[in-house]
Length: 175
Image (cartoon, rainbow, N blue to C red; front, side):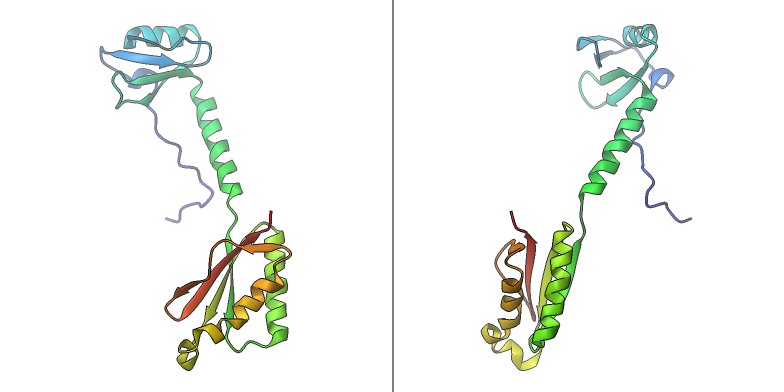
């Protein structure tokens, strides 16, 4: 069965009647002083406030329980997960070659400029073959020109990195 990419996997918390036993717990929540009480007292406090008793961390000694609305807690977690997901912009990649023509290089620079202005980072990869590898410094001319074409909107995130037959640089928005 295919999984929905947008589905949020809510963490499973034990709540209310799922909590059994006779042990001490630390209760927290809005309008509640953090204190250690028995599990039964914590349930009575939550019931009196018409809220749920939610087990946040069972591994602590004593376990941490929150007095809050379970639905509201799950809603907040979903909202935060969605907000965090929106903040991440994908990395766009531009492939360059050693003998790229000036016009093709300009076209790739224009595309990279659009990506950077939209908030993406651009990974420029120069691939070298055969004899181009023996003259690495001369072969890097096209990637250096590419960086210079974009210097008004982007700066290299780090130095040029040689990775086998490739030279890689990541460009990010200036400022």
